[in-house]
Length: 170
Image 1: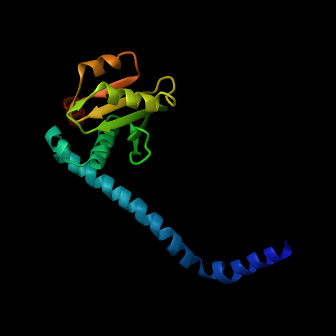
Image 2: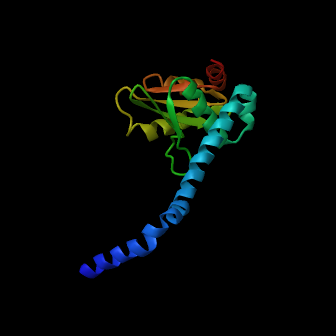
Image 3: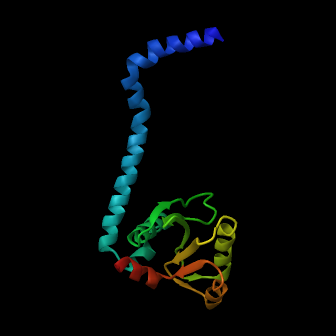
């Protein structure tokens, strides 16, 4: 045990302490780059959204950018957001927070969202949703009448493309 302590003390004294600046550069640079990239990407998306508040433009973008735009729109509504979508997101593309409550958001870039898509989203949030929390299913298109009826007794709000466009303009 004493030999391990001696080794660690020697390692610290010879390699780490005299070259602390080197280790900060090596391990700190990727972190700084990642934070900067994230900040710039969000700033560019916000700038883009100021000039492009039309549904027709959102229909042409890729799904990842659409998720980021929806997150920015919800930030404009007073939510704190984090885009979490990707492989293994379990149907939740954006986590939003307001007044101490979590909001689960799924984004669908499609013309018609069917009840099966809504039920799948409900299945992903039902085990984790708590009292006062809810889900938003956001689409660039519309929801079927059966889908609208199915969510009436669920804590899910459906936001179609036109409603999203109106939310972005406010």
